[in-house]
Length: 329
Ligand code: ASP
Image (cartoon, helix red, strand yellow):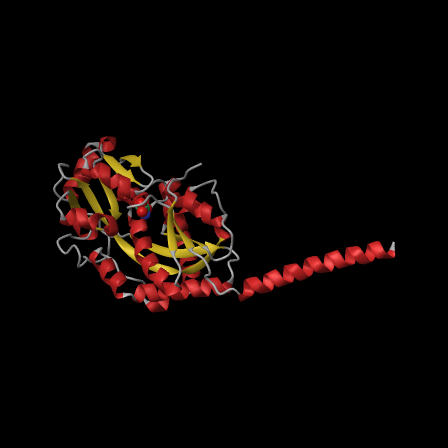
């Protein structure tokens, strides 16, 4: 009897020794010791994907590890966010998302994650939007677009990247400000939406400068206004929406980096450090400027700043969304 007890005791203590050694080993392995996956919750080629690939290149050099971009589109970014919420909290899966992280809880009755399933790494950039149309769309300016949309009610088609996407939010605000209804055409990202705009298969959309600047400069789409408070240097010819017939109309799409809840602090700190380096990278800064945006300033890059900002934005958009009466089952 006693020898059996001793054998069991030995097995149990061996088991715990292996466990502790393994944990100790894990703690000794420097982070990151393997590639990091950066999930983009929209299709490749869209504005969020553009921001992700730009910062990933620079963060990868700083981390001395590959950063693999994984595009998981659908449901306004909530499918991709759910993918990260369920990932191992080991620092090897991160989420690059935008304002949709703040609006989804008000728009979706059922989400594939809980709001507390994420750890803040840091803010990245706030991108202005442009109101753009297919080349041969009749309205010549925003005022004519407003009149045209009122007269043609739901015959005007408007592209967005699903409920909760930035293009959806802008469209929601536009319909309210224009006091009209548009027929919305949802895509898994404004990358594919842009293809239909270029092909004349959808009338107009409100999308981020990171996706529209090159097409506007090439004269392939019509541009009516920017949605930022002031004009932007990369598209100096564009008036603001506020001065073109929609007083007070302003929306910019902030982006941030997150990890699954309980990701070790050593990983969060290392990722935050790499993000700070990336946002000071001259290549990132100049490419952002060409695309109409700029990095968040250094003083806003602490994880706690993102936590506070996310809470404020959730409250702000919850009120707007309830007033608009928009939600998805
Ligand atoms: N950010 C989305 C994308 O990259 C578009 C959107 O949110 O409107 O496709």
